[in-house]
Image 1 (cartoon, rainbow, N blue to C red):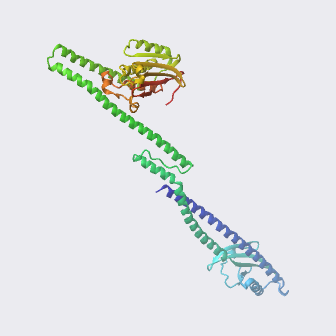
Image 2 (image 1 turned 30 degrees about the horizontal axis):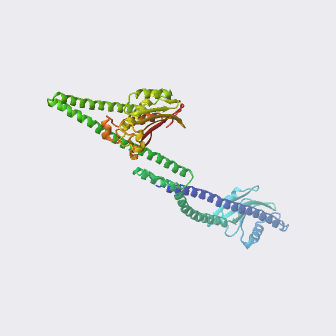
Image 3 (image 1 turned 135 degrees about the vertical axis):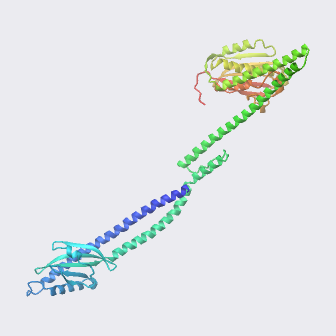
Length: 482
């Protein structure tokens, strides 16, 4: 059953109970008030009749010392006819509660008479011949006699009004419930519309449409729930996109790894088979062994790089204070023997927070790549030809930390390739990279090391003009949060 139907049914049940109890209480209250008024009037009328009877008894001639039964009947007859419309119902009984006079139509039994004595006044409401009456009984002291006067006042109209009140209220209640049901269906539909929209969004997302969002149509709690759901959906979509990208990157990595592994293995197997199955002269044997050794070293270097990347992904950098000058002195000493290109170092003194060995690995890779791109100056345009074969390594204090940049004036990198070169095994010029014994892992390692330093590689490059690789390190100890 739909939630809106449950809401309508529960509301209607509560409303029906409320209307039923309130209607019963209201109609019954009016009835009891009217009946109480009629009883009061009946008792007052009984008192008036008893007083009138006693007064009439005083007018009896003095020849009677005791009021005779005939006179009692005569007085009772006159009292009966003296009422409005001449239709009083009364009954007179003597001391022994024997009936002396009864009005025509007086249909009550003698139960109330038997319960009444000369010191009490009593009444009851009875139903006789499909009519309702207030039956009263009171004692009368007339000429040394104790008589009992009973009266019956017709109150059928009060009961009829109660029945009509209940009937009318039932009809009004039915109309109100029907009207309220229609109104509540509309209200419930409006109130549950955000839930329906959320349900539809959930189904769409379950079907694979992660871009679908629920429309927010209110600012209440359900509207806030819709907003929270959409924010959750955004986070879910981002997570799924990241997972898909990671899966795609993993597949690309596995494909590239298999390809890079296949090339040296093919050479090693081929030359090893040649050495095994053919009798070669010394020169060819040395050449074959040299190919096997060279490709084996390539495999060894690639495995070490892959291991470094895996370790970098799992490691947390322990940053420590390091003088920038010490790091540049290490680099100058390491590349002092590099004769193919001119490396120019310049830096500002500062205290940098980093893991020295890891950052040195990054800079060695960047400088080595810059040297490879600048060795021949091939591809550089005329405007930069005077700088061909030059690599600049610069360090300076900037807003946000200490920026280190490695700039060359070599062949450059196409803009479309710049976002891909930090992926493992990705090479812009595969034939050239392999001729330099490269496997496309250096920049991937740099990116992972900088990531654990909460930095990233900034790449600026133009084809024929050269490239600049830079990153920023903190100059103070910071607590980073992902």
